[in-house]
Amino acid sequence: MSDFDYDLFVIGGGSGGVRAARVAAGEAGAKVALAEEDRYGGTCVIRGCVPKKLMVFASEYAGVVEEAAAYGWDLTQGAFNWRAFQTRLNAELDRLEEIYRKLLKGSGVETYDARATVSGPHEVTLSTGETKTAKHILVATGGRPVRPDIPNAELGIVSDDIFHLDQLPKSLLIVGGGYIACEFAGIMNGLGVEVTQFYRGAQVLRGFDTEARDLVADSMRERGIDLQVDTNIAQMDRAADGAAVHVTSTTGDARDYDVVLFATGRDPNTDGMGLEPLGVVLGRRGQIEVDAYSQTAVPSIYAIGDVTDRVNLTPVAIREGMAFVETVFKGNPTQVDHDLIPSAIFTQPEMGTVGLSEEDARAQEPIEVYSTSFRPMQTSFAGRPDKVLMKLVVSQKTRKVLGCHIVAPGAGEMIQLAGIAVKMGATKEDFVRTVAVHPTMSEEMVTMRTPVRTA
Image 1 (tube, rainbow, N blue to C red):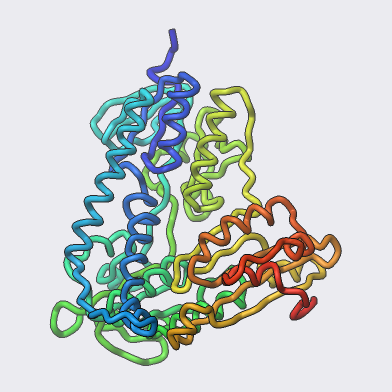
Image 2 (image 1 turned 180 degrees about the vertical axis):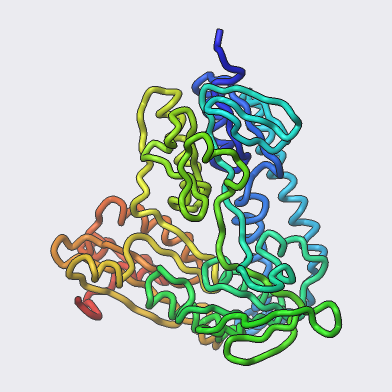
């Protein structure tokens, strides 16, 4: 008989933690428990990817009537009903959460709707006062949005809050230049909100390919977003009407906004977890330091997902959870390959990317760049100025495609497939040998013959 209550205790009911728990129990036959203090599904399902993508879908209907008219349709533009959408959204999130609960139950995982902290190398204490022991503890508590350290920051909201607004604001200031900030700028603009965005740097979407970033920023401005770079909040106070927020920018402009949204970063959820006193090493931002097998400095404690701040994407957390089970419960030491992971940013238009940016590749080795930007058929016919980008970054020596970057409607769908080729080590000549699918935007990926520049 085991000396512990459980073989595995998982803290966190997000995608990574749930996958690890149910596979360990269902496939490896382990006795597993999981504690979640909020809602099952975590950031992605409840307050991230899923509701955000549904809001993207909702916002994109705004231009349908105008574009349809160019194609001969006589449609009438109606008003967006935020409350109706919100009700449907909440029902969908409830449905998804229930699926997560059923998956755990069906796998034999015992669940606790409580906050759990680590009180020993093999011990977890619940907010209910109970203490449980486990041979292995897996921390999968994810991350949380943070407010900047400025006076009156509590007057603003964060991304978790935007799904719960009683009504859409007439004006919104978004502070930040990362993918969350840019995605919500497009969403709220599409829903009819007057959107201003401040970013303290020279260009939004830092870390991504510069040419792609520039096209996204230009498109945002063309769609009516007041995107201001090299700009930040100098001061914010409650406005004279007692409801709005009065903001003075570092450029000296001052105005009232109905809502200020801070999209200025996320921190790992490790506060008050009791990890450091046990010897678990935390990084500067509170992230749990782990080895290639997701093991901490305390051998019985592991961590996966955003709480480790490696690659903060839901599919990566799921992969890490699966690798943890293979390593610990199936006797098959497994590392997750964090290289060449495709990703999509649901700006409008979308950006899809895999591999190195032109800038990073150039710093690594001599390269060729194949790039084309054009007006796609669908919107060009309707007289819209939208432009798309198709780009390949190629090694001069090996001819391998080091990076692929797409800015276009449906870029997320395209980059998933392009990611397979890049991951397999496809060369530029492999792309060229592939017959184009015509007429599509993506055919440009295999018809670009001459590099636009070398470096």
